[in-house]
Length: 60
Image (cartoon, rainbow, N blue to C red; front, side, top):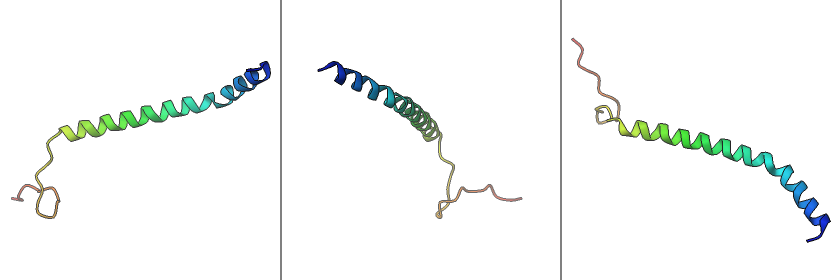
C-alpha cells in the first residue's frame, strides 16, 4: 500500500466515522424499545371479550 493510499483510506474513514455514532444510537434505541416491549409482554393481559376488547366490570 502506498503512502497516498494510506492517506486516502484514513481520510475516508474519518469521513464515515459519524455513521458509526448514528448506528450506535439507533441500536441503543432499538434495544431500549425491545426491553420495553419485553417488559410489557411479561405482564398478564387483561381479560378480553370475543371482539378482543378489554372487559369492563359490570355497572351497578
